[in-house]
Length: 157
Image 1 (cartoon, rainbow, N blue to C red):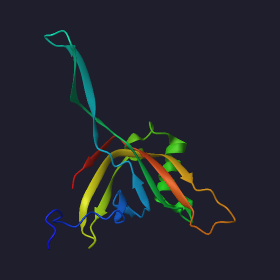
Image 2 (tube, rainbow, N blue to C red):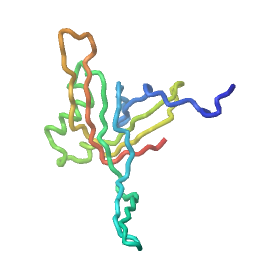
Image 3 (cartoon, rainbow, N blue to C red):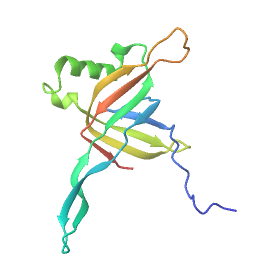
């Protein structure tokens, strides 16, 4: 019996990557892909004197922070994200604002590795890089969690 509820293959959560300045950066996780608008709440009294609450969408889009996770690079000083982070740390964001903030995309693929989703972010910059704790009792790869502050996130595909 055919399944009438599902007519397309689902997006597989493990097929994605980060694209910045035409460079593909391999990740192990992404969170914060939230596209949201501010909601304005208006309270007013109706004809019977009772308070009524009306919620309406505002015109301001909220920009989330993107949190990306990846294996820590073996040569951090040659890594593009570490270079970007260090440049911001050393020069600040106001000196060369255009090069400090970058546009990029989180690209999603289906099970046959065809692009089926794309979240474009505008004017992002890495505000934090956190490296996993290390231990002599662990044999797992060391990961980094990177926070990207962005001004806008759009789902375009």
